[in-house]
Image (cartoon, rainbow, N blue to C red):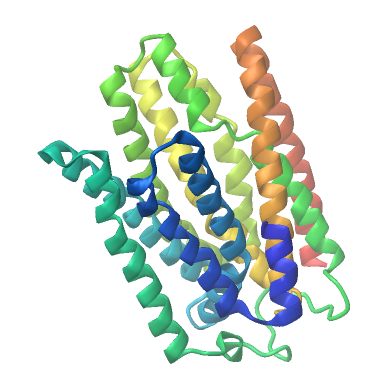
Length: 331
């Protein structure tokens, strides 16, 4: 959906309508209060995921235009930090309703409030800034912008390869939490707390790395493979304190992924091709996460050592590609 949405965003320049459609599908979640069978519930969940795929390229393009006045890194860092605040508050609201004997139905019904507020906020933003691309013109240059109006620049594909390798070696939290459970390193009740800690770290690091990116540029991307490499050593240990460090590192890398990885797209492309570029990037990101997680899940059943070797190989390859990418940027 992201690939299709990104292409349509560039061809039609209808960034706001596409974003509205994507966020409008959030309403499928509070609709879960009224379903009576699992098939309908599954359909609504799939629609919500489709909504995220539809809105992401157009939304990121809008953010990239608006962020030109504060710096791409900080702009995406602010977005990620606020996104994490919502990701924490939403489940807390649901849990509070459930705890006070509201049940699942009332828990989902209360989510109509943030869903409708989300759409109302979009309407306000659309009224104030109907053409976000006016923040940026094709004649403008940024510190890193590479101009090629006919197609995506060659260096974009180097960056895409770097992103694929970096993400493929990034262990997902489901495998980490599975290890915590079966090895009895962390109690069941503490596993979601560890995830909450990781999410808090995610939001905080997003702001820090966003500002760092605006100061030193794409050199900051090297932090992704460097911080990803030690994660399996800590997360798959048998020590409680190492598990905490693993969760913190995981949250930090996730914050970097969702901040400067997106900011780099804005600085590598002109706005004529940016929606499609975000579509391609998000597709590559999802494919890498899916492939890497599948491989690491299989390797975990054989030996944790094999899993660690897979991470080492992919992240070292990512570092090699990064050096080539950096050389092209400098030249």
